[in-house]
Every structure is written in C-alpha cells, then in structure tokens.
Length: 275
Image 1 (spheres, one colour):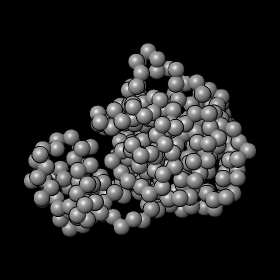
Image 2 (cartoon, rainbow, N blue to C red; image 1 turned 180 degrees about the horizontal axis):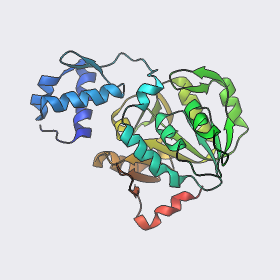
Image 3 (tube, helix red, strand yellow; image 1 turned 135 degrees about the horizontal axis):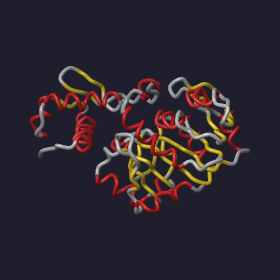
Image 4 (cartoon, helix red, strand yellow; image 1 turned 30 degrees about the vertical axis):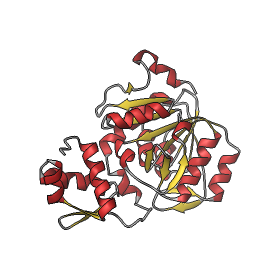
C-alpha cells in the first residue's frame, strides 16, 4: 500500500515500531511505496518528538521515559507550534484571566499575548515571556521544580490554583485521540486537570503529531474541550474525530495567514472570542 501523505505514513511507522519493537528504513520504504530518504526523514521527525529511537538501519520503539527535556520538545515541529500559537491569540478574550500550562505549544502563544490580560502560570518559559511586559498582570504558581517541563508542580502548585477563577485555560498535550487527552507524566497531568477544572472555557493546542502519539496519563476528555487548535498538517480523519467530539475546531495554516475554523462557517469564527 502506498502512503504518500506524511501524517498517515508516520502513523503507520509508529504502529510498526510498537508492534515489532523495530522498523527498518529499507523495508518500510519498499512496503509503503516511498523512498528510503523519505522514511529516514519521517523517523527523524518522530525521534525529535520522542516517539521512536533512531538506531542503525531504522528506529526502535522507545523505552518509556516520560521526561523528555523541554528544549528537545520545543525544537520539534516548530513551524506547527508557531502556527497553532498564532491561531490561538484571538481565542483569548480582552481583559481575561488566562491560565497557561507548561507545554511547548503554549509557550509559543505566550510571546504573542495581547495586553490587558492576567496570566496564571507555573511555566518558567511563560513567566519569562511575561515578566518584562508592563501591560500584563502575572500570577506565578510556585511548587517543586520539574526539570523536564521547566515548570513548578506538586501540592503547592495545585493549592495555588484552588482559590483562583480563570476565564480560559489554554492547555497542551503529549497525545490526544478518541479516548481522551494525555500527558507524559502524572505531575504535569495533575496541574493541567486542575487548570481545566477552574476555567470557564478550555482551549487545547495540538500540533498534528500529537494526534498520532501515545502517552500514559489521561487528564481530560476531548468532549470537555471548548476549542481545539490544530495545524494544517492534520488529516481528514483526525479532523473528523475532533469535529465530532469538541465544540469547535480551528485549523492553523502553516504560514502567517488567518486560521480557518473547521467546525463552523467562517462568518461565525469571531464568536470564539467570548469566554
């Protein structure tokens, strides 16, 4: 069978690696009807996302190690994350209290936030993006430092959220699919869950690779998401799942253009600006 589209091809490579523990670049190229160079490029992308380990001749399924460094995750799928971050800006209402989690895709939004907001966060990169701005109010959540996510977490962080009211929680994920939204570790999942619980609206930011990924800690139902923002690399089947489950889907083009609402006519897209 010929797999000409990168998302479906990479899902098939992940499936093979999970089933056999190893996928050969040469065999996969022959069986999927593409060049070996294309397969190697796919495996490099999957390895950058922490989904496989590159080995001689191909890739192996990773031994679970749910603490991929923030910098490594930040440098994977950068164009997609930047596109999703741009498209999320109009979803934050003027003057809102917005909670931002510690994901790398959310960090791409933090640099673009409009003035007049109150930002609640436990993410060190988000804190650094906001501290120099006089047009933002910043509420920093303390706790135990978690190196892999460059954030604070634990009981102190959770307690800091309990007395807050948030208009919008903007969350990211390691993986998402029909069974829910997942994080890579329990501590991170706990804070995401707490942010969603105190928010009037939940916005989920996903680059399309997350829809083919797996992670161990479920923190949210897809049906609990008000708006999900994905990039234009998301395939038709993935979009159909999101449209059937979430209240609204916004597709971000992989350039500086205007985001396209996938679940509503273009004329009604501005309605997502209200909390």
